[in-house]
Image (cartoon, rainbow, N blue to C red; front, side, top):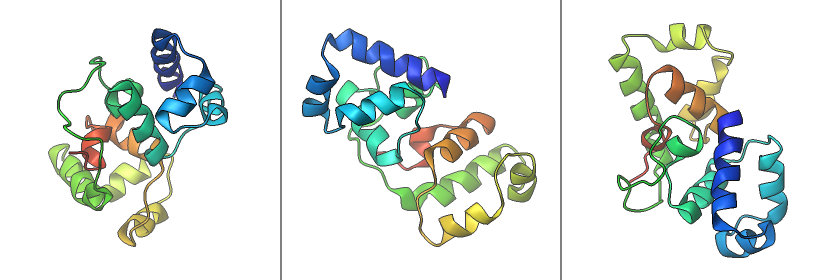
Length: 144
């Protein structure tokens, strides 16, 4: 997550604005920006507000892509209901089962039960999946 902090700092620096100004313009509070700059992990919704404000992909923010600006996504909406489908697609592309992937991760298998019941996965989990299965955070959460 150090890359997220570095990229966020760079994006903020490039605006030449105070955190208060950014908060007013982005919808993300100055306190939240401050916490994220110190290492807290934002939610998917807040991260999307940040990406929308800076016109970049989540993959760029978290260091999975070098492309700062995104042209792939026409809007910054997402459809989290696509998450399980996209996750299973990545597993198939990498020829690995869910159980083997989770066994080799730092996460408990029970998290999938929560996903299947409709809860939104934590951003650190989505990042881990994208990074370790050569995928995209943006694609996993169904950005379009």
